Length: 256
Image 1 (tube, rainbow, N blue to C red):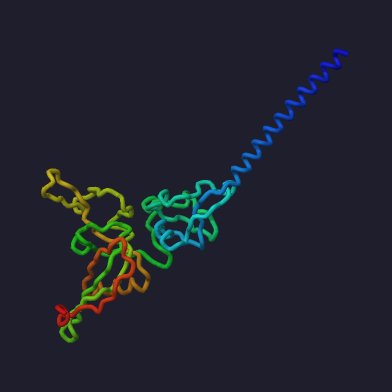
Image 2 (image 1 turned 90 degrees about the horizontal axis):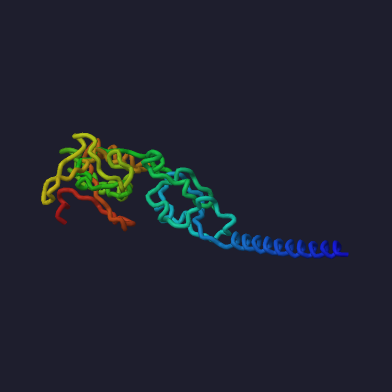
């Protein structure tokens, strides 16, 4: 009789233990499912995005936007804030509806200039001394206006200066593709010493070239202008959108 009672008590204890463990397991599973179902905001491509675009360009053109996705479907390394990809370039294209992940972005200096060239554009370098490139203060990522002066000679109307390209993006200055890179003294011919109020002489790199993102048609315009005349770069403000059109200037209209 005692043995049967012990067996019954043991069975009850085991049953209760199993029920408690099952209840805990179900509670944990339910909690995990609820957690995985919780919406998380991540960046998602609204349309196909070609490689080479910067994070700022993608956001500015509305090619990506924040969307809520169940946590279980969030990709590894999914981006939820633009700060994590600032200053970087999309190394591989994105498909519409695809989540934006940090692994797809690299710094231009790490993957080569080719990845910084927007779709439909090419990179072209021009010689740029300090006068031509705004005192040597241009940086990758800046936008410039390019003006050209041509003098067809005595048989024509005369010299004329006109805005050739109203808004052009700078991809590189010298060998630098990173806007935050510190100037380096690599060769004596590429540096200049600035003396003034500062007790310590500062070293800055004199830009030998400026590399621009141009359409093939704009390449033709710029090459022709450089071969037949002179060009100057004018730095546009960071907030510039549309640059007003001008009619150009000749000697007779200079002071109008």
